[in-house]
Image (cartoon, rainbow, N blue to C red; front, side):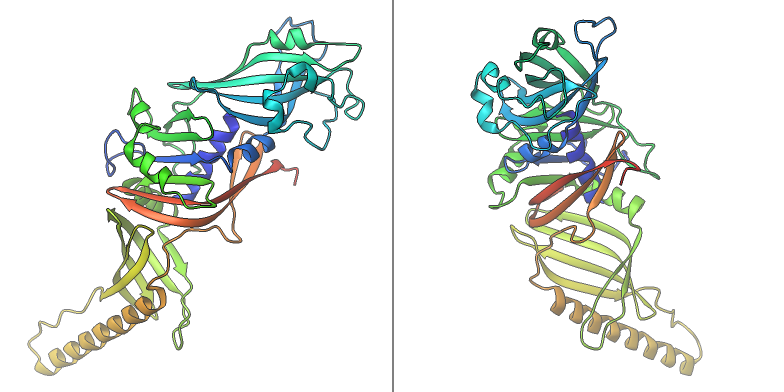
Length: 408
């Protein structure tokens, strides 16, 4: 479960492509909410988890164990989250099919253990465990709260249950961004709800108690209440944070633009986003057909849709000259450039007007690494919204485990 929340945040740090001025002080830079349709699948793919046994733990012969078959059982109503897993010696071959399901969450562990595959795993023993994850500023802990062994010659259930807390993960001072922003550090807050997980990111050391920005925040509650059907992930971010990510990772990019008679790519530079309630504007420099314009694209509505595009010529020549012929020629150039700007703005408006301002990964999934494991994230956006200084997006997400680095 520790990997799950980190995966969620890492994916959306890339998606909202640090920490100084430009955002509302005290508020999280960004948040992500894994909804009920996403959390169980996230948990399943995070296995296997390898655990080093404490020194002198001789009642289990293997020095390391692995937890497979992770199954999400929901929040426990007391700030923690529950999950089931199957434990084997590290050398065992885990069965290819998960032997657990959500229906097992309320069953007695002993009855589940009696059905564990041992022979197919070529393992001397196996056990089913009940795990609990908790978070308090600024540490995530994982613990075994109960265990039952499969019928075999060896039964390590008591020893495994005695492990108690087996992982303690610091969530402050995290280095989450790739170069060139790898010098920035962040604090990650986590809240486990009955069916969802909320994660919030802050500049390191900026907030002592993040509780007000988790499930109690009215804005987040409103965003969660309006999430469209089919969405399993909600994320929001301050415009200041988005702009800093754009400056660092996307100062220049090309936008394919194909309208009749206008099929050259546009080059976009220095984009800055700003917004309010149900409105957002993106400004930047646009290069097209050898000309440079100062452009703005505005979007409006509860689900942001593009309304207008405006362009103004950049770096117009100064026509304040004494030679009348030269001045008239210069003014004629200004009129021609202004006319091309209006024509291109009209074409952009006609092309984009009414289209939703959504970000989807398409055939370019986001890729990120946690430890030595690489993941890919796919997102199909379903809704974008703006509330004050915050931009939010809801969509259908899938996070896939690709495997160990260098193994694929």
